[in-house]
Every structure is written in C-alpha cells, then in structure tokens.
Image (cartoon, rainbow, N blue to C red; front, side, top):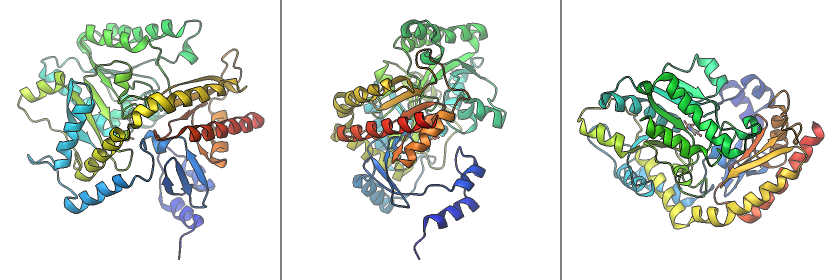
Length: 451
Ligand SMILES: *Cc1c(COP(=O)(O)O)cnc(C)c1O
C-alpha cells in the first residue's frame, strides 16, 4: 500500500531527529514531507507545489531535475562506486575535479583537499592553518579570528569558528584558540556612519583584536564574503580591502569561506572574485555539486600548499569519502552545466539585475526597513519602525510568522531572526522572479495583518 503523509509523519515523529529543530514542537506539528522537485519548484506529499526561494539550503544552483547529473552518478556507480585517495591511489574523477577546480578558481589556488561537507572543510581549515604555522616555524601563531553571527558549520571546530551563540552554549564552545569580532552589520550597528565609513571601522576591529593578542599569536582570519546564515550581512565596499590589507600587514592567513558564495551565487564564480580577495584557503561545498550529492573541499593557495608539500611529511588528516568518485563525477557534470549553459553570466547580466530591481520595490512595504543583497542572494529586514530602524521585540517572532505564511502560500523563504532571505536556484527566470515577488508581497501583507 502506498504511504500517506500521516504514515510518514508518524514514523518521523517516532524515529527521526531533525537538524536545527525543536523535536517536541515538530512532533506536534508533523513534518512536511517533500517528495519531488523540478527546476525551481518542490512538491510535498499532499501535492502542494512550492517555489523554492532557498535552492534547498542555498545549494541547488543549477536547479532540480538535471538528468545529466543523475546520469553522471549512475555511470560512475557502475564503473567504480568507491575508492579512496589514502593508499597512494585515486579515482580519475577526483583527479579531474581537482584539475578543473584549479582552472576555475584564482591563479594562486592550485590544490584542493576534498571533504564531504562544508563543516568538514572548515575543520580541515582549522588543522591546515595550525599545520602551516608549525611548518613555518611559528607554532605560536595559533589563534583564528572569526566573527559573531558567522556560520562555518556544525562540527566542533566549524561550530567554534562560527559565531552562533546558541550553538556555542550547547557544546561549551568555542574550543580554545578562536576569537570573534563583531560583523560589518551596517543596518543594525552603523548608527550615523555612512556604509563606507562603517566598513572601515568594522575592518579595524580585526586590527584591534590582532594588536590586543599580538600578531605573533594570530594564525588566520576567516570570513564568508557575505555572511549568509547569520542574516545575509553584506559588507560595505570598504570592508574587504581593509581586511585584506590588515591580514597582509600582520602576516595573518586569510580564509574565505565560499561554501555559499561560490559557484555563481553572486553572479561571478566566487565571492572572492566579487570582492577581489586573494584567500590563502577557500572552503567550498554546497554549489560544488548543486547539492545533488554531498561533497566539499578546501582550495589551498600556493603559499600554504608549497610549504606543506616541500616538507615531505605526512599530514594526518582525511575522510573515508574524501574525493568520493561518484560525488566528484556529479561535481564535474555540475560545473560543466554552469559553464556550458553560461548560467553565471546570465545571472550577472540578466536575471540578478532584474531580481535586484524587483526585490528593491519591496522596500516600500511598511514592514520592510531595508532590502539588500548581491546576485542571487537577497534579504529584507522586517522592522517595527522603518524610520528609526527599530527592530521588533522579541526578535524573531515576526520572521517566524512571515516564514509560516510563505510556506502556506507556496513559497520557501527563510527567516533569520527577523531578516527574510532568499537564495534561489541560479536558473530562475524573469517570469519566476515576478512570481517570487508577488508571493513575497502577499506574505508581507499577511504578516503585517497578523502583527
Ligand atoms: C552551510 C555552510 C557550511 C557548512 O556546510 P555543511 O555542508 O552543512 O557542513 C559552512 N560554511 C558556510 C558559509 C555555510 O553556509
């Protein structure tokens, strides 16, 4: 007999612990079962269609239903479903993907260390950074500086690198050797400063932290080019150049966490291209395979790679599924789609400017304090008073109400506190952008009524 929604919900309630969820509340409500997807749409087990404004979890860059990716996985599964790169061996797809990544990333990024996720990539960063300074003869340089509201994953080092207070509280994190400075959140903290002035000020918080610790203690600075899961914090233009200057001046490695910003999300291949960054290490995941299979990695710049290799010593680190042949085959096919169909160019020249224009119209809504974003990342702030930039109290309620209206009305839009966020598949068309804006408007009206 065919299973029904309530069958699934019963088994889910009895046996399934969900990520980042209140299990008790979810059990009462019953989870929504997503059964299939195509293009920019997903369907639930009751047959409702939703416009997926989040590309899954910021990852389905080429959209759902791409047969080329299914075919690449199927062929690889038959040919060689598994082999590793521990035993002086490697599957061909891992080698080819390493070569292709070196080609599409900046000229100084020529090596990759494969992982299965962004979290593992950031745990790898943590170990690589310390390994690098040990080899460089400066083992005292061991502190990594990150930012409040950063999201770098859920494993121990990644969650510690992140700046999510509720995560830290549940695991007695961060682990030692990690410091956090405030993020460049102009709308919240900018006060009377212009974005440009504020960007410089926020960057200098890094300099102050380095000065306080002593540069001989500081190993690296890590940041997402745009802080995504922390509330789509778009730094002012003045921020990254100043951060890069400080890292160079104090001989601190720069780590750009490109897990979301990479693979076209900003209308260019990488966030580092957009902000003209030259990171020493660059974690990647999500859009690397458009989420069709789990895969991540760390792009390792020549400075770090050269020393690691020159030393001729084993780096005791790796995962059973690092460079998994099937995940690599899918990533290769995914990058081929992004390239051959000029999806990123189309985002840059056509659909992102249109999304920006339509999204910014939402700023006229009485609930919306600010609209912001780059490329196919867009956010709006729900506020109590848009003239005084006053937030709702308690924070997060308005966002939840809005998010629930979206779900009920056929739209996946995420709430981060009271910041509403979209990150659609890069294949979204102009007509679908119109559909998105119409749905957002409707849900904002419903939210305003309820509040
Ligand atoms: C999602 C995310 C991660 C963690 O990736 P997982 O694959 O969930 O482990 C790390 N960094 C950033 C910026 C992310 O958005």
